[in-house]
Image (cartoon, rainbow, N blue to C red; front, top):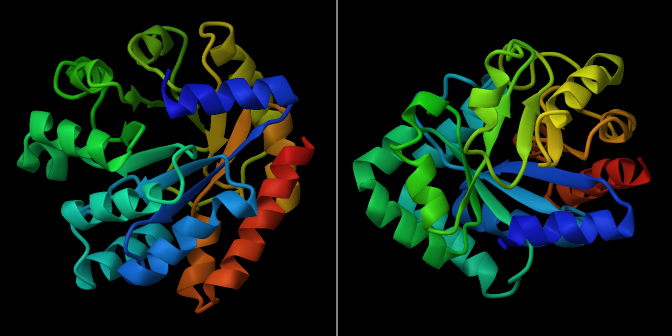
Length: 263
C-alpha cells in the first residue's frame, strides 16, 4: 500500500473528501517553494502534487507555464525537485507526494535511474501528462513495479470506448479534468462534473479526483461534493505569482481545503 492508498483509506474511514494542491517545484525559488510545500499539510492538504518544471508544458495555461519558467530561470532541475521532496520527507513521512509533469526529463535521465531516485526521495506517484496508455510499457508499468502509483487523466472527451484503456493500468486515483483545454482556463461546474465522475466510478474502484478550473472555497466544496475530492493548482500558483507571502498563500490554501472537507 502506497502513502496515496493509505491516505484515501484514512479519508474514507473519516467520511471526508480529499483536497489535493498543486505547486510548481522551485517557484519562485527553491527556498520559498520548500517553505510552501512544508506548510501544505498543516493547511489541510491531503496530497501534494509537485510540478516538475519543463520548457514546453503544452497542457498548462499561462499561470503554470510562467511558474515553470520562473523555476527554470532560478536553476530548478529534476535533481533539485527530488531534493525538495527529500528535504520535505525529513519532517513528514506520511503526506503523499505526486510528481506531475512531462516525460522528457525522465526519459533523458533514464527510466530505471529516475524511478530509483524518485522512490528514494519519497515520491509516491506520477502524473505524466504526455504519455498515453499506448505507451504504458515506457514508464507506467515500470513505475508500478517500483512501488509508485501511476495516475491517469480522464477528460470530458474520454468516451466509453476509450475509458477502459485509460483505466487499465491506473492506480492511486483517477484525475478527472473537468474542462476541455488548458489549466486555469475556465471554471469547473459541479452540475457538469457529477455525471462524468459517476460514469468513471461505474468502471473503477479507484477514487476520482477532479481538477482544472477550481478557484474558490465554494467551488472546492461543490466539486468535492460530487467526487472523491478536488485538486487546485493555478489559483494557488497565481497567489504566489502576485507576490503574496508564503503565509498568505497557505491561508488561501486552507480556505480551499476547508471547502473540500465540508463537502
